[in-house]
Image (cartoon, rainbow, N blue to C red):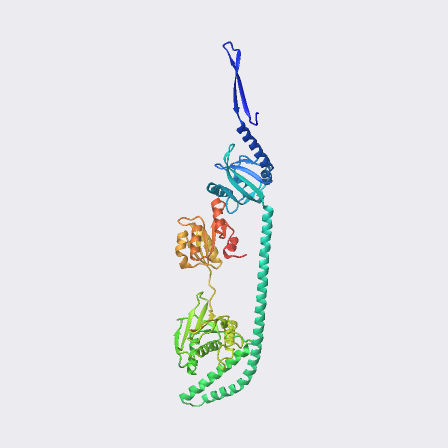
Length: 541
């Protein structure tokens, strides 16, 4: 060493013909740069070995670990030198990607940008999962060639704290939601209590009024009945029949108000609702209340029958029709439209009364079924009619009543009443290319009360799906033409909420496992216990 520089001296003897050394040849080579590189490498190694973070080098081309400092080895639970020569995938934990996929993903980014930073889920030698934050970059090493240098910091404690904070936040959100629901529930209960008190008060008042009215009604109705026993001309006979019919209607009205505080079960009759609605409107035409209104009828032919009380439902429709006539009283166009139809889900008969009246403001629509609330002019409304309508339809007949309105265009009230229908058998579509499997499950599910349809492959099942409209689809995964995964995907495009169950005898194949995991579809493996199959298919606990 001279003047801070390093030299390598090489010498060898020069001999004569007699093999005697006559001189020496010397070569002096300046190796300062090499010595500096060695010193820097030694220094870097010392830094790596004593860093608080784990550091390791990976070959860019082969993914093999070339170097790991002691902190990295300790972090992952390996002995000194034990990681060298192993593939980097050994330290990656499976997530939604396999360890190999994680490695490829990071390397793809490194090739494009030269660096990668992020959180990684890792695995120790003993199988323990933990989290690290990695700072990864490319480096050209004289010793190892093109390598990836990765600095890992253990962030498991931080992640645990974040998870605890997240769970605490979720708990607080749930608690807030429950408090909000409790408050809303308490408010609704208060409103219901107020409404119940009003209804009780109305019912008590109705009972007193009914008592006072029914006595003279008895006399009127009785006298009319006595006159009908005489020999009368046809005109008088119709007059007394009308008197008897209308006194009966008054009796039904007073009974309805009385029943608000002391409910009486409605009659259970099999009803043709088209006829009930027609009778309601004809009575009002005969009494002159809607004589000068244009009436349009659009009745659903062969509307299925419902179970109910015809007198009470006539009262509902009369109330709604009279309300419609009052709404159109000052309008140029006086058109009353009566419709009957079947609800979209096929469970209800729908009857609507539509007018071309003044309409109701949006902020008043929620209040119109409250006791004593009315939108009519003084002298026309008591705020009681729609209360009775709601009580008869929803409480007594287990139906629904709703309203839609637009100012200046009119209002539509819709009454839905449930059909009296038999319980439908659930349908199951079974797709399997093995005939004996189809026959087994067909027998089993028929014994369970299901209506069974079968298909030999996915295409056949898909072709018949919309015609059958099954409640459940049970499909084998491995089938020719179209497999179970493909069938499930196609069906979900048609009906996202469709209940689908897959079955397979190839569960332990890696690709099948991965696909089942991603598909998130219930499944069972063959062979299977039939009781377990039933629990999965029928969603029993």
